[in-house]
Amino acid sequence: MSRRRSIKNQKSAIKNFSATASRQTVLAVADRLHSTAIHLLRRVRKQDVATGEGPARLSALSVLVFGGPKALGELAAAEQVKPPTMSRIVAGLARSQLVEITADPHDARRLHIRATPQGKRLLHKGRRLRIEYLAA
Image 1: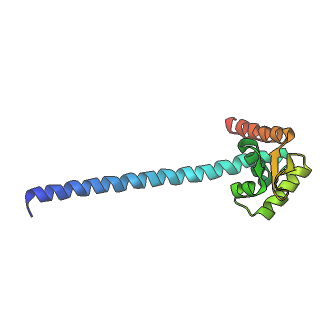
Image 2: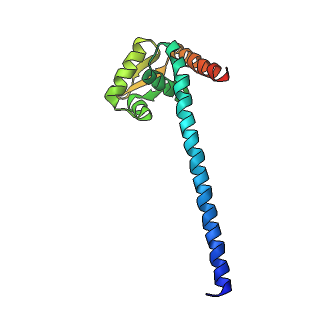
Image 3: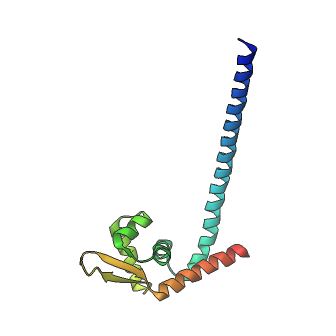
């Protein structure tokens, strides 16, 4: 093998090693970040108890408050649940007067769901409690 080819192979090996090492570093950082995020969310979730609503309802309400009104199917898709499950969640939110449900004027089978002012206040209160907890 010529000296030139040997040097080229060495450079290639160094480049591959650097890329592998960089990728391993990125994966290690991503792994630590993932673990930290899960632990952090578990800790701040405890603040949600003060709202009086469960995590599924708060999550659906959050989609409506920050994403605007949605049809039931859109809300179910956003929350990655089946429509019957979302129907039960929305019914609970409606009983608590946190959402308003209206029929589509063009299609009576389609429901539109929007957060009420009370629902928006509750969600913003929960968010404030989480942020205050993190800041303490």
